[in-house]
Length: 153
Image 1 (cartoon, rainbow, N blue to C red):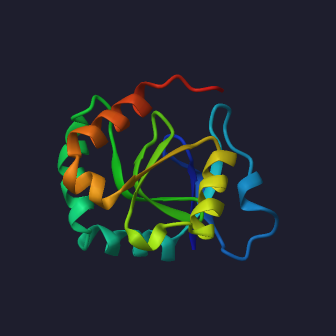
Image 2: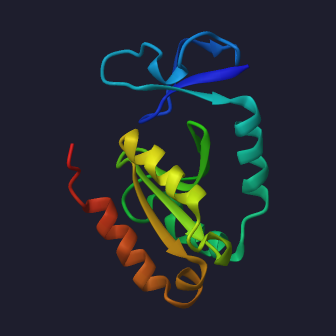
């Protein structure tokens, strides 16, 4: 089974369960005014839960700075959004933060993932593991700027 939730506020929709084999594009599922529906599979949700239990050192350090509305907004970690899991997300600002290690250099899958997020109204900020570990203040400044950057839509 899948959950049908609003992409921006994560609230479940009435009758918010859907079979993974349901007909039609789940991204085009009807949603209440002001919300956009997206289907999140239970497998992806479970995988995200597992990821929360084993963060990288950089993710653990960054989470200590983001949690508890430390920057004035609420962040989630290992947040399933559509077909992807964001390292960190701020749903109020439609901002995804990805903490990238060496394996992400010139990654075509990251490009496709970023394109999907942008197509669905999200901004993506990618920060390197080494920047979190060696330049945390600079990383937090970049996140703060992204939080307060006016949206184009």
